[in-house]
Structure formats: C-alpha cells, structure tokens
Length: 327
Image (cartoon, rainbow, N blue to C red):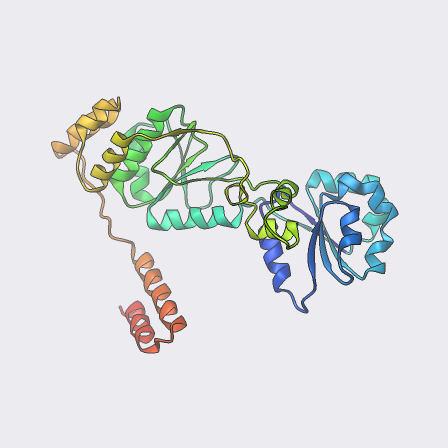
C-alpha cells in the first residue's frame, strides 16, 4: 500500500497515465469510499481519493485489500494524511511507502505556459497559481515602458490587474514587443481574443460525477484522462466577466502588424498607450528583433527531424539534423 500526499489534484492525470502504462497490466479503478474497494475487480490497482473521509470504515474493512489482492494507493492532502493517521491507525500502519508530491499545475496548464513562453503568446490564467521558472513577475499597475523592457528580455507573469484598461494596456504592449509570451494571472476580466484556462483542476470526486453520463469506463479514471479540466468536463470554471471589444481586437492586429493605432487607443481611453505611440512616431521607441533565439531555431529543427522520422522520411530527417548541428 502506497500513500501519495499532494496539496491538490493537479498531478492526478499524470498519476493515472503512469498507472495505465505500468506492467504487468492490471484493471485500474479510482474509488472515493470503501464501497469502491469492494466494487473493484480482484487484483486491481485502486486509487482511493481522500481516504480520510471514510477513515473509520476503512480501518474496519482493511482486510479487503489483501483478500482481493489489490494494489492500493491512498491519495491524500497533507491535512487528510494527518487525519487518516489519527482516525485509522491500523490502516495507516499498513502503508509501506509514503511519497510527498510538490505543488504543480495540471499538465495542460504546464504545457500551455511553456508553449506560450517559447512562442511569444498571451494567456489568461484563472485561479490560484504561481509563476514558473523563467518568467519575470510584474504588477499590472506598472508603466508601459518597464513592461515593454521586461517583455524584450523574456516572458512575463503579470498580476494585480484592476480593470479592463489594465488588461488592454498589458496586451497592447505585449503585441507591440511581439517576441516573448505574457501570462495575465487572475485578472478581473477575460478578453475574448486571448486564450484563457483555469489553473486549478476540478476536484477529482466532482470531476468523476460529471462523467457519469458520458462513459462506461471507470469514472475516476476517465475524469483524470480528461486532465480534470473543468472545460472538458462541462463544469463551471472560475467566473470572470468576458469582454468582447472589436475595436480592441483590431488594435491588437494593427500593433502586431507594426502600426501605431493612436486613434483607437484614445477611443478606448488608453491614454498612456496613445502618448507612448506618439513618441514612437518621433523615433523614441524601437521595436525588438522578432527573430527567434538560436536555441529556439535549433529546437524547431530537432522537432521537424523527429516528425520526418515518424513519417519514415529518413532522408529529410538526416538533412534537418545536419542543419541543426551545422555551425
């Protein structure tokens, strides 16, 4: 029996992926109470979520683990592990290994953050989260100039936006610089033109309930394979006002194309941006090079070569490899 102690359910999808790939294969089930242990097939791998909620029953029915030859993993928060130790001491003594997992994002969030940083994209991230390594953390109240300088240097994690004007200003500066990504963390509004996602996973038990009419597979396993993603599960995410402003979308497109739409900025009450872009017309602002750094170009070639190998085109793959290592 193994106890996994995690601050939340963010790593649950990765756990299920790992268990599905383990050899020898066994039936995999996710249980949310003691009844789920009896329902699991003999010899199954079973993840029991929040065992502290049924601690006394679990203590009483612990022989089911050996009688049904199951591999049991107890999925607990730190508080749940402490409660389980006090309320089910006999069951707790059966634990052979205890592993404490670090705070993490769901895999879909980690992939979006890393991809956005490399590709110079904007992303709105809702709910509790902290910046990954490599991001510069700034307050949205910062003047456009320092934000532009930070975006020239690398990806930016922007927090503390107070209203739509703060969000519009940040996105316009991101569009102006055009080289590195920006994450708007938990702003008060969500701009329709910018992708957004919930940082926090749906609670595993609630996610399983949402799958009840969607699959014949084990509900907990299916929910995890969907990444505990509230959107994929049809669950309400973090509530934020959505802003659909065609003028602002047009402004972003013009800025990305190298123009300075001062009139649109003034119409949107973005006076700081309008003043900045007037200075740009007088040559006081220069745009950074949008050329990808050498390591990014090499990474793209490496990925292209791998894709050619997968397609069976070894000649093209070798050509790309030579280009990648050429001085």
